[in-house]
Image (cartoon, rainbow, N blue to C red; front, side, top):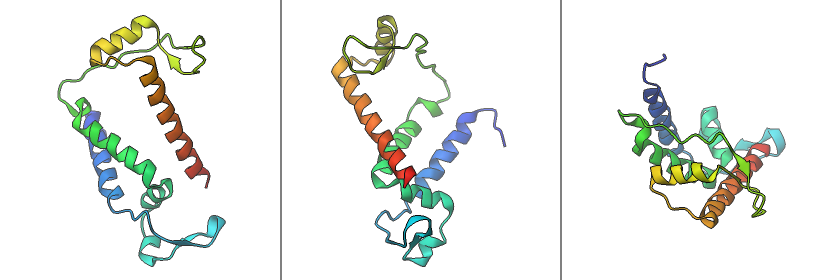
Length: 145
């Protein structure tokens, strides 16, 4: 149940997600309102809860998640040799730019850029943070529905 290498279990669950999300019909019609909503197609009504949760989250959210999962599976998380992530312990809010985006110290940012090979300027980082915040807002809205 608990493998010595947790990457095996993580990989299996991510592959299960990819297989399940591929079967979801995001154009499926629903009838009713509130908590008594049902699928028009009775076969969809018989689907497992995980399938319905993926449907409720929506195509846009799952497209992003699917891309992330595929990228993760292709990356170092499943590699035999493990790498460590940069630790951001001294996180502070950048107040001089008025962006409200949490950033690490200059030394930590430089170390992260050196390790990953990224030369991200503040506008790129701000744009990525804005995209992530937007995605989280959409997920929260879908959950609230």
